[in-house]
Length: 254
Image 1 (cartoon, rainbow, N blue to C red):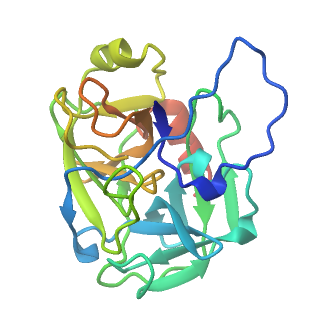
Image 2 (cartoon, helix red, strand yellow):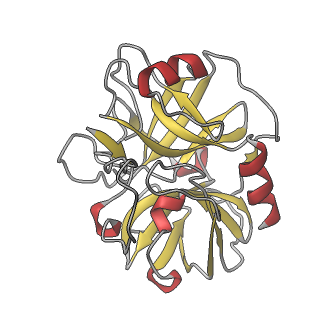
């Protein structure tokens, strides 16, 4: 089954009639697979996006007042339902918790094919300190070499049907070619980039949605969707931050 890296609390969306020839990608059974415990001081850009006080997705700090997450994490919910927790390795305690003030979803976001999957959050000014800092955006038009490891972090469940871990997890997965990803899915757009092992075993996967994929010191991807979790032959799909349309949208909302 396909997955969107999103917790079930946000699945109940109000969606209008859709042409029969288009089929929505079902929600991901997301978790970080094959990872290990991580310290927030090593990943100070990591946020827990919380829906009515419960962790639902990841997000990344890009300035003192802005963060980015996946559009499918915020679509269909009111801004007032979201807070973020910054500066804590624990998803339910510590750090700074602030109310999200504004949600800006890419106007071309397509829930049915999970394209343009990016949302910019406006926050009250965060106090940068140990464990809280911004990550730089991958420059528009930049390309990672195939095989470059992306660092994925989050609090997604550790096993299918399992509970969310309390402690932040991290895993490294290499970039795969666009041709390889296209052959796996047949529906990859220029706004998507893929990371994973051909043999599977390590992956982002529910509750990791919207979180960071970092390489060479830049935010290169936003956890988006995929088939299975760490399934052989099916890499994880990430919103490509260096894509011109994605990059311009993020910067226009800074």
